[in-house]
Length: 200
Ligand SMILES: Nc1ncnc2c1ncn2[C@@H]1O[C@H](COP(=O)(O)OP(=O)(O)O)[C@@H](O)[C@H]1O
Ligand SMILES: [Mg+2]
Image (cartoon, rainbow, N blue to C red):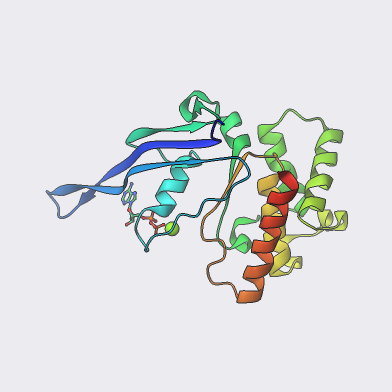
């Protein structure tokens, strides 16, 4: 069976300046190889500064690797258009309270990725947004709310809905549970597992 995501010998180098006239070549990560099947979860574990965020940002298309290849459904990522890439791979960031626009309603927050990366008409967008809200366990009433009117778990649900609204193949979560209390961590992990099960 073809893998959903294949990473081949991925390396990322960057130049670090040591003093005014000298710099050294450092690697953020090197020789990364793995493949991921659809419906599966992969955890990347490593100490702080070991290159996890740089690696996942490369996979999400926010940074470029120095060498190596990334294949999505057998097609090299560089062959995809930005729109195709944005639709296929979405990222969840730490602290949704910082990543949700405080001046936009939940409805507008969820509409933005559809306007940018899909060709759906107004009615189809509306339908997709309601379907996605239901997927993450929020009522349509929340569409008119602003992020600061929501609890912490609800903000995570909205961030997840924003990531899911384009029906991506891959969701990348970079330390989204850091700094949260244990019960909230359980709720978010359970929500992610439930969505993965529903989408399988
Ligand atoms: N382009 C770059 N310029 C300078 N430093 C970089 C660059 N890319 C990565 N790094 C460094 O590589 C290291 C890896 O960081 P990061 O990916 O955030 O690790 P982690 O998420 O595992 O904590 C950090 O020390 C970071 O500063
Ligand atoms: Mg990190």
